[in-house]
Amino acid sequence: MKKIFYLLAFIVCMASKCHQQNTAPNTNSSAMTETQQPNNPYYSRTDTTKIDIADSEWKKVLTDSVYQVARNKATEYAFTGKYWDYEGLGTYYCAVCGNALFLSDGKFASSCGWPSFFETLRPASVLYVPDNSHDMERTEVLCGRCSGHLGHLFDDGPPPTGKRFCMNSIVLDFEPSEKSKRE
Image (cartoon, rainbow, N blue to C red; front, side):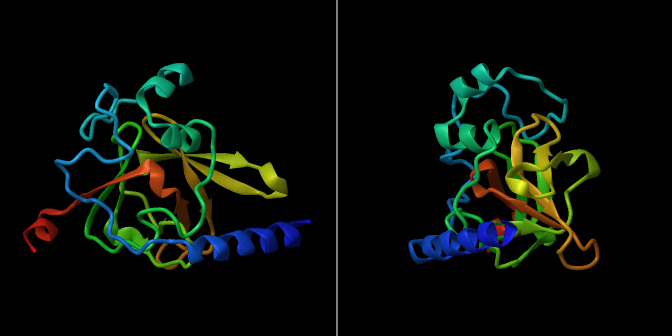
């Protein structure tokens, strides 16, 4: 059963790759991205206080695509997200609440079709939950501030951690570093 699932996942991934667009994501920090909502009062890149908001409230302040991944644990198609192969220098934040999650220094090319990182920005950036859905044993990764679904953690990453945080682009925002902005 697992072999069939992986074969089907591979076919979907390859089909998605054929339709990808090779455009750089909008990294202009002053521009409103597709993931941010101007009426999201919970979004802050400086506040690390844990927040517990009802899903009905999240539905009001998030775009439908962000809501589906963050609150309903959907997964974007491989090779279609804006950050799967992006190489900019900076920080990745939760698109739901603004929590700092990963530095670009921890990102690597995993060829899986989703942005992959080998470490988080800080230990409390994310939470880990066992996930046995789809007849697989995985570890779900949630935002440490809003508990939004980000992706999954696997033990096939590079040194020094051996971890692969396989994240959905749609629930990530990116802020270029100052050095990157000057270049």
